Length: 122
Image 1 (cartoon, one colour):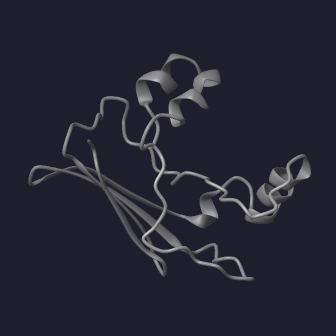
Image 2 (cartoon, rainbow, N blue to C red; image 1 turned 30 degrees about the vertical axis):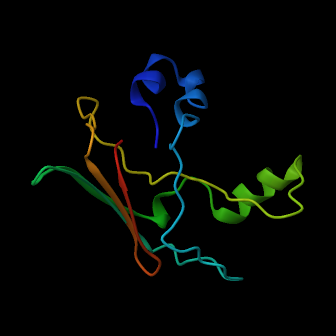
């Protein structure tokens, strides 16, 4: 999850917008496979606020600008991960600039074939 107010100040602030407490969640399971997911794999994002749906969107892996093998190549090019690592790409779904989350809002990210990650804004 990104802090959009930090991110919006300057594109160079993107790393700082993603490194605050509880900004990264993994789950509900982790897919370990020697084969990548098909490019048609759908990702759905839903934000829910007290019985209303303020934003929902979807995309597919096909929309990524770079494929996973290229991303992994660059990740390992100058780094060593003896115990492995996670490559976080984001969802590729961006709500409008006017959108903001509030305390207790629910965030659901579903990747078809893996499951749904559910988080609440604290």
